[in-house]
Image (cartoon, rainbow, N blue to C red):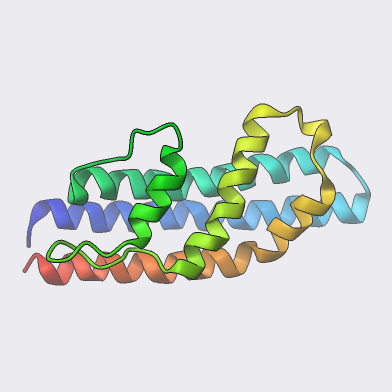
Length: 158
């Protein structure tokens, strides 16, 4: 097996394991925020939603640099990276993520930008609720698609 492919596949698996814990912590914090009517738990929810997207983006950056040979550098590189991951590159690789996953992740990417640039007490609980409600499904989809791509790497390197 190509060592680079094995490393990338293992990195995907490791990051997905970490993200599973992030998802669980997000859901626990949301539950406490709702049950205890405590806004301070919303800070934890926001931080974990930030970590969720950032973890996926780390995977995407690694794949873009290692396989595609290029990570976008434009001012909107975060958006461009998602588009690159959703794009099949003939004779190099299939699309890494589906259009549906890309669209779902755009919401988390945009929220991460807000978390980085706004004081947490300005965050809207309704927006957090929407992201939390979609989190398990989005993670399931991301996990399936990235695991599938990891399997593609393993098969193509034999």
